[in-house]
Length: 301
Image 1 (cartoon, rainbow, N blue to C red):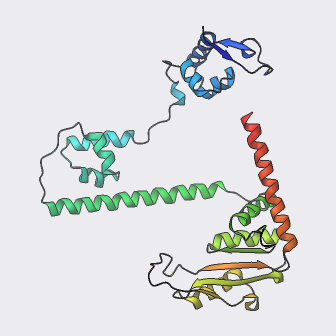
Image 2 (spheres, rainbow, N blue to C red; image 1 turned 90 degrees about the horizontal axis):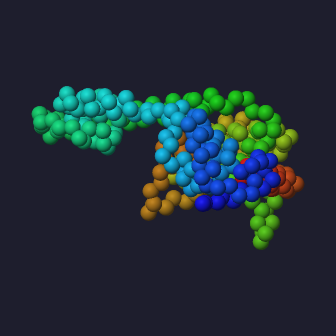
Image 3 (cartoon, rainbow, N blue to C red; image 1 turned 135 degrees about the horizontal axis):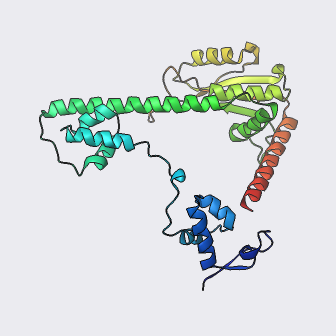
């Protein structure tokens, strides 16, 4: 008879305290499964947090229908098989459905292969159109996902912005080092959206605009003048608050990918006389780490 040790004092009584037999737990697990409970519900009900044991308890018992996620590609698979039976090639099916040829191959490989009716050039043209169609569908899906995610973020509370700003600074801002004191609040980034959030955070902290200084860091081979104008207009500040631009020397042996009209270098945002602010930022970050660790501990117990 297999025995399973249970943690005492969990308030569940009976088999949930001390030692429970595998057979008794198996009987309970099967009963709960047939009542329509999910694995997680059974795990929490019986307090069995070992996946191997839970798998053994539920062995041979199918999951209830409500826990099964629908396969979004089932309809595509059916249509692909229908088109294959009509004599279409992988390329033609790809043009029609916009899915990858690797997926089509898995879905229809057991069906008879249609006779070749096109020249290699015609087949290549069809394949190209199919790939273009696939790329367009992927881009549409990517855009839709981003739009849906954007809509999920509503107005930020002051505390949410505060926590976000602390994490943002600790990811992208300058840090103090034990071997070199750097208690200065300096933030560097190339993303205008990130700069906008950071400036909103500084405003929330009460940092006045006249205490901010900016300068641009950019490759010397880029449009330096255009980048300086862009960032000056973006922050809407007094040009006198902009220091001399830092130029990165161009290395002809390497090929930069951050080129084109969208490349404007990085903006450096410096807060004057900010040692005390930096110390508070570091303390806030330590507080976030402690709070997250405690929350994780509570979730595990």
